Image 1 (cartoon, rainbow, N blue to C red):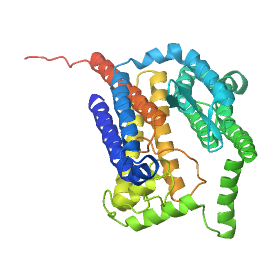
Image 2 (cartoon, rainbow, N blue to C red):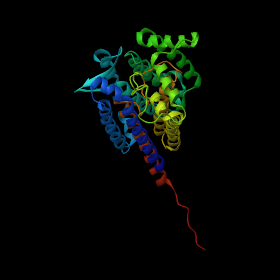
Image 3 (cartoon, helix red, strand yellow):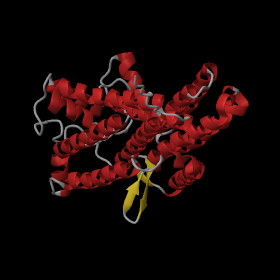
Image 4 (tube, one colour):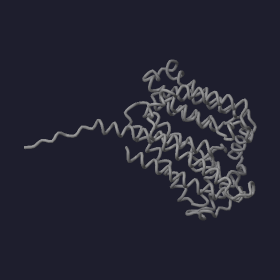
Amino acid sequence: MKKLAITIFFETFILVMLGLVMVMTASGTYSIHKFSNVFYLFNSHFIKVIIGISALMIFSFIPYEIYKEYSKPALILVALFLVFILLFGNSVKGADRWISIFGSTFQPAEIAKLALIIHLAKLIEEKGDLIKDFWEGFCKLFYWVILISVLILLEPNISNGILLIFISLVILFVGGAKFTHIIVTSFIALLSAGSIAMIFTHSRERIISFISSIQNGSDLNFQVKQALYGLGSGGLAGVGIGHSRQSNLFLPESYGDFIFAILGEEMGFIGVLIVLLAFLFLFIAGIYIAKKATDRFGQLLAFGISFSILTYALTNASVAIGLIPTTGLPLPFISYGGTSMILMCISVGILVNIAISNSIVEKENYKFPNSETD
């Protein structure tokens, strides 16, 4: 398990370094146009990368069991932050998702995601088989999901809210909840989240545009069209790092939410496939770590972290190729950003610690065979 932990660390490091390169190539033209400095966004992202890698290393050495003690107060604090952002948050493109403190901004929704995964893992371990009981087990866990996801949906941050519900339900199912409870709850949650999404203009327009493109064969929205142009022009091997045309102000958010398209344009199908396989490997590694963990909390935490990383990666890729409506979610470790980058690195640090801690336990419990001499 220790070798697997080292492998996960270096794979994450490589993905983060790839992200640095992609942010540089995707943001250069925009940085010159907006800030008269080709390195403006790259420099900002580089600082977040340093913080993220440092956090990964630090959390790799913090015993993961300690999070059980502080998961509830941490989640309550995050909920208060989400309430605060609804009242006083900075509006960006019609959504109040950011809090500024001493000149630094962060998204509480990203923190809420990790905090909720940790708390659910703790509660499922405590409930045991009682989770199969709908009222006494399942509902007493799921109300935390409702509390956090509704606050996120009302920002409005529809995509993060829906994905958080989805990830939470999968964790509950893996934790032993009945399939019928999951199905019924999923239907009600999807209906409720969809209703909230239709209230807000920007999310309603994205959904209607996506449905219209399916029903009538009409064009996808401008961002997705430009993303597809980039992916298509990349071909098998790509046009080469730094030679993207779509990043020359043709594709909005080319360095952020749509960096997957620039990745495909510059590195081609082969590069995109390698990156997606890297995310798949992280998930498989997380499953293996969960399987080897000696405690229920560690098992569920390892699964939840690895599953959430894969889910966000596939969601970002799906948006870029037009499979789902535009979400505004970053590609983990690669897209420009601060809160997502740092929280993803912290998540991997926790995953690494689970692997290391359980490898030590395995070593301590290993019994050497008795040697007999004739």
